[in-house]
Length: 69
Image 1 (tube, one colour):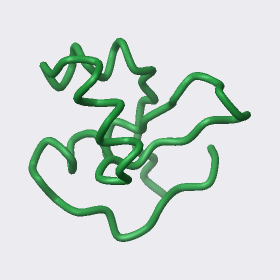
Image 2: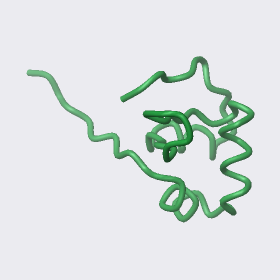
Image 3: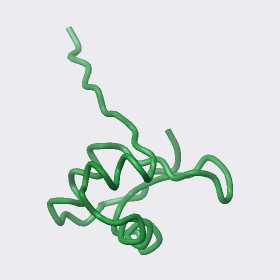
Image 4: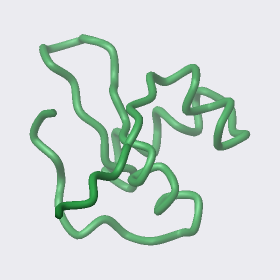
């Protein structure tokens, strides 16, 4: 039997609340690719998986960038 894991997706506002950082800090990390996130279209809202957010909070460097959900 395969065990499924739930990996919630956050927008910028909920990610900031979860990580306890300012929105500018989180957006800068996304732009510098220190935090993995994705946008479904150009200038669309950022989406961030909780597992990627947890890794960023711990200071881990992402191995690769997600392309989409």
